[in-house]
Image (cartoon, rainbow, N blue to C red; front, side, top):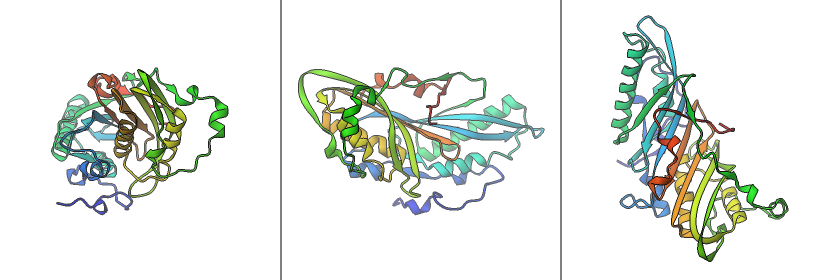
Length: 296
């Protein structure tokens, strides 16, 4: 069956459901965007995960007492589908008035089991699902990554004219070197727009790369600025940047991740890597919450 973005609930008015309803969930095939950028479903150039933090979730115990939790949802980048964000929000809202005939701990386990089963059926993949409360520990992702502007003299940055605001991979510049070079940086300048609603999406981007190139970091900034008028889902943006860096810099190892500002009580954090040992443990842990960035 062909995918039609108009079938989703994005950009449409929808009433909040009063009772649990799994039919609200909607999935989007990852292949729909990957094909446009030469990413083969049968030979992905990366591994990785998508981590969703859902901050607005509640259900009722047998005596009607509300239990509120933060959900951390983790599923792999090689799954054939991603869950559409508004459908997930409405689905989680459908638990708000649902009463479970047990106490807090037992009800929590029942609810986790229901959500896990529903999402695994929808996405056709295994997922990790964890509940957290205000006392839960958190992990900070990429704590040693410095802002990319720390590596560029301020006067050079101020003298650049930024005029590309649609994704422009030709901006990426580098020169070959005799020895591999390692780069590790972050930036908060990433901004793109929802593919359906055209609402802005703000993200912190994290890059770790080893390449036989001397990478022009000013060109990287210019390239990232060129996303400001692009319309894509969060996962698509990260995969596009990964593919462009792979093509431009021919890296030995590469990691691209983004941590997006929450919208509708949910933030989405995609991570793509060439090698598993570069996956930040905070993205994989079901024992600790993924700590927010300053913007989230």
